Image 1: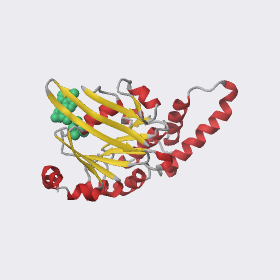
Image 2: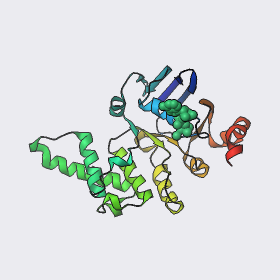
Image 3: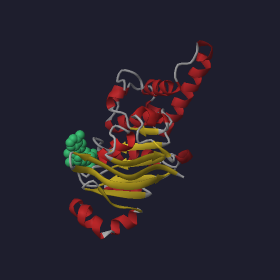
Image 4: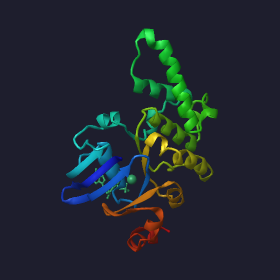
Length: 248
Ligand SMILES: Nc1ncnc2c1ncn2[C@@H]1O[C@H](COP(=O)(O)OP(=O)(O)O)[C@@H](O)[C@H]1O
Ligand SMILES: [Mg+2]
């Protein structure tokens, strides 16, 4: 089963191809890393998949259905989740309250008669999510008091509250201190596979990429240079020349 299909997708600004005829398939339950030098088009490809931008040509499919013409919120309803901006976190509320609000938002307003039962379910689901991102111990801390790595976990928790089947993570380690990286990697590694949830992650830390990815896609000047297992990608002479040689 294919979660996301990117089919001959190009995105041009004027005559300049920013994303150049990219074709790739993310399988259900798969963890794929997207790497490439700065300016390779990684974030642009995410924008095309999430619907923030429309491709100049090509198609995007979710679970086999064509979503190329759909707005981002409609793709989100179909299970596509992208990390929230930090601004989506309410700094003065607790971690648990932030996640409960996101769970509540996903479920929509309950009628009064259902409110009590629904509140219990929301709290229970928020608790499960906090446990999955390993933030239970910080549940009653205010979100504003979290360290960078913990904030990233909270952002992932808010994303999970939308019950996505596909997660797009754009540089989830950015701004996180070296001591916090291992804990965050543990959480990220666990995200794919769970009831066929798949992940597409842009990340510069090659050690993290090699640790978590089932396959690695390499973008270079907007084009897909390789998409294969970590071993095969690391051994690919074109990849070494174009990317790994200059960064390692
Ligand atoms: N809205 C835009 N207008 C003009 N150029 C853009 C726009 N978005 C991205 N680009 C250019 O496209 C290229 C790829 O950018 P981006 O997708 O952010 O790369 P990456 O995420 O791999 O670093 C860069 O050269 C960038 O300057
Ligand atoms: Mg980027």
